[in-house]
Length: 283
Image (cartoon, rainbow, N blue to C red):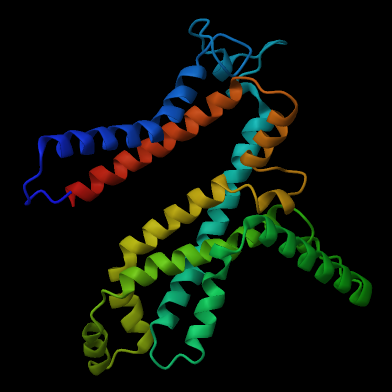
């Protein structure tokens, strides 16, 4: 819709109805989860049977709330740890890769860039299976050939971090790379002409320019890691992440505590988005 051009009243009304339906489609599932998280019922669906906080704080034989479920809290903490380490690793490696791909004399840049973005088009299930098979082969080879017990290559926490890093770094590469294309290279050339080293020019000029993109890339990779399921489920060990734990629970029995978990996560993400919006507007 181009505001500078004249539009008929029917077109304006249809456009507003479309926008309303679109955002209603996005928001309605979240509203439903928020409402059912406080439903005084042992089932995750309607009808509404009254307001209760049991699915957050109860600790009885019939009901165990979110903050009284040690296993559920542990899975949340595992997801937070996994997302943190994966985001740190992805941000560092992805930023370095973005800087390398902007170099004009970087050999095989086109081919390597293709391999860098390949994890985005490969299904997560295939990615998880391939990483599991490869890591199992490497671990078995080290143990049988050299007698090295490499727990790092067996399903567990660090293998999940490594598996998620395979696609997390790609998101960082794209986000930081998009920001880097707007960078004025003459600033680096001026620094080099003033006897600064290449590393100093990157650290004191390029990185500060990329700081907003690096922060956004870290947040995006953290959220992607926290919610990832299709790759993680093949690599997880005895300590499941939150999506895997919720999946295992809902297969056999589901209670509104799942709605309570979803409500807390949505509330947290909304608060972070509002704070980020407020800070950016203030700047």
